[in-house]
Length: 500
Image (cartoon, rainbow, N blue to C red; front, side):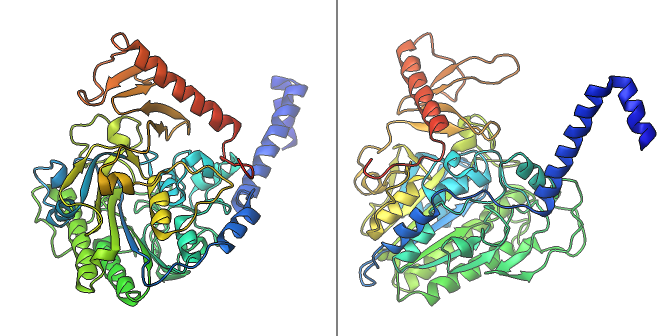
């Protein structure tokens, strides 16, 4: 070691050698702290959160509505037959569209899992919750350690308020079935964020270990070899030992969702069915494998469609249909094998195919049947919609980016959004904005053609740059984008002062 250090000093000079050694020791210390002594990001407004939840009044059990949110993982805008797919048959989800509203211009708040799910549950853009940079990884993965070394965190920060927590405080039974992907350390799991009941997995199904949990206990342990340094695998045909049989996951989730509804039929409830599929790797159920004209991916989506039917049938069988708002959507756009339909781009991009997703809402007696809406909406809106319908006030100490969707769904009122912003999964910044007619993107990042783009949303699949034809629209939207960017830099968590 002495000879090595002396050689290094002679090769690069003593000052540079000392700096290199200090940098190496600092990096090693950060690694050890992040890997073995990690502390989650410190909450800034935990007292305000606790006071807000303590002040929520109990809902009237006789009149409070129920809520069922069914979230698919990576389901593309063109994957359902009601959205134009000609190979995959989704009759039960299509029936929901026939009985309610199908939105054509609904968005996830981010083009990948973690930030989109955080936005749905908090009603806030991902930067507010420190989830804007790509996705969280299994705690066994070196990427989780790297995230922590960079100060990014790998679990949802404790002072965020989730819709589940607010509804729980109002007396709702709250249940989650399926994938979480918002942190795995104790204190940052679904039961710690307002879900009375949880059955599911912590991570995406390509990450290991993929234990199956019932509340805080592991019900089925994943003993596979992690395989790669990322702790992830992509090949559905690869057997890495004693792992969770993913062919049964959709069926298991459906069974638990039905049981939760049956257990809580006499009280208001919020059920979040957060499916693992059609995220890769794709595993079709044994019973229906090979039955879809859409191949294995079609088999997986058609399994999900049957799951939707089972949940809705349970509501109707128990006489709960007319007091239950059911929402079906996806956490981001299509990935491998999925269909973005006529849209440009896929998952992880801020082109339309990365963030525009299916959204179907059904509430007999409240939402008219058979309506197709081109109103603007985003999954941040589910927070505000559910709280408003439950009579729960929103927290006043933080920006809520979502808006109540019910006027649009119920009466066809104009969208509560004049613009929507697109968040890059790579930089964590917003890099595009759209209004009813136009979409402006600050840069394309397409192999040297890195210049602003303006597209007509009603006539084009982001193919033709129309800035020269509509400079006033480009200038207006560029101004909105820069204003929002500056606001997020100045106040990234979106805190509000009392009375503001």
